[in-house]
Length: 361
Image (cartoon, rainbow, N blue to C red; front, side, top):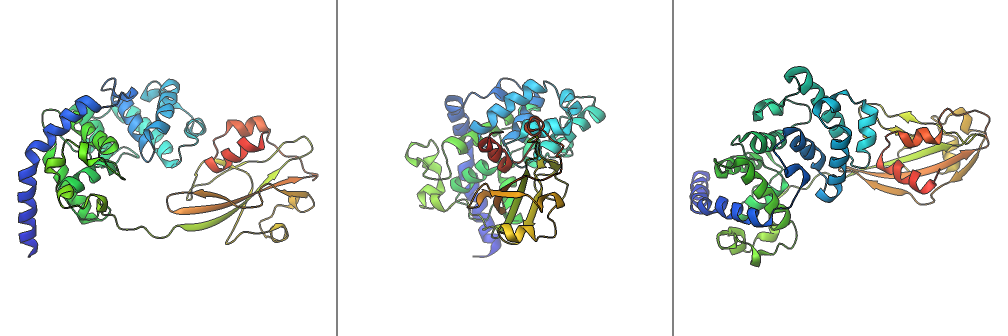
């Protein structure tokens, strides 16, 4: 079949199914929607805060962070005035720390350019730091009734299965197709409710694995169920293999039990967070190899070393696998500047936070 013929067939297939799709979703959502603290009103600050926090974060994990941020910074002006270190510390444990930095920058721009009032259009919202098409559409539709469709992982999955679409969702052509399809389906009289309904449906009903299709209100029109392709969808091109990194943290303890932290610079993971002195190598190093390393600080040369962990602590990021070793360094002459109270007050990567919890200082 020609490309034109395939497009005509696809359009006809959508037209047949789209009439009942939105109505069924809204009925399902009215019965099944979860009570969320950010759904209590249409406050754009609350909705924006929740959307940023919940990017790549489960609702159960993100909700306590949302409540803490709202308590600490009740308005966008409060967040705009917050020191970066304070924001990163409050964010600690969520990962993807660029989200927190961009959130603070966006708050500052809203205050500086819009006098603390959120812009109302999808276009203006998307110009804020850290706000992409999905987040901008969510705020614009939920808070300002703009007819602009959201497309997140849940929406990709629901649409791919219902219409049996095999275009990859992480390739430009597929992304464009799903965005246009989502926009053609959105309810014009309740766009915010519709967007929340389709996302909630993907999260609770049309789940990534083992969806309960027999109890699905859309099963009669679901083409992938009819064609037995549910488990194959959505199609996603595999990412490149993860990069392995080998991190060796030196944890100094001087005679007063003080230690040493440094702030991570830009251009790498965990920008702006704090860490112990670090030696990174292309493979795991033993004590002798570390003591000969060109980056070893002088105070660590004549000291007592203790391996905190014999086996590497594995910490996985989206495209990296970190192999971490911690070394406790003691019995040296130099004094260290940082108390453990200060260490606990700083924002640190989740990897180091877990070490601190076990180390117990």
